[in-house]
Length: 194
Image (cartoon, rainbow, N blue to C red; front, side):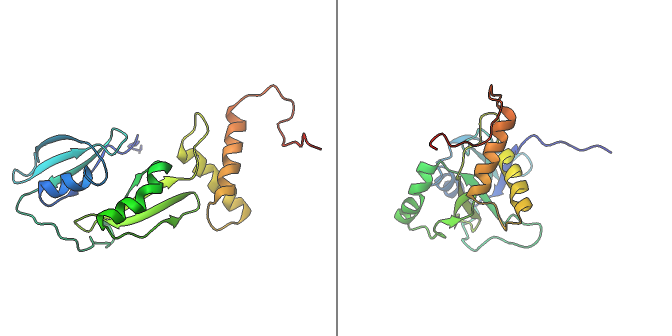
């Protein structure tokens, strides 16, 4: 038996209401360019809208002009999607609360997640949306997942409850030492001010 190896998210499709609500939210609030549209090839009563969330992958929405927006929170039963999280730069994240407030969109405020900051709110159809901003940049040649994997090992090795800034900094230092050669005989921390 062999795996079906994933190489990333291809797209995520959500069930929308009418076309205008989808375009106004995904592009008009979240800034995702509306890049493609065609009929839903599996249901002729629906349209299929495609949005670029910023990395060239896709968020797609099935729309039907007979469906009206319902802001009731979507199901959180087992097997349901709890929320979708989208990456924001630190500069945009710092403006997110103000920009949500100016639209009158209720939100959680900034939540400290140790390795990132988050803000939660619901879309016009009750789907929980997370705006997330990492507190670190991975070293050259590494991904955020590489840093988090290493930070997890450091955190659990120290018996700490969750990943925090110190674990990230130590993980970045370790990954850099492993992947960047040096002419020094000793890479240990030193005090040149003694």
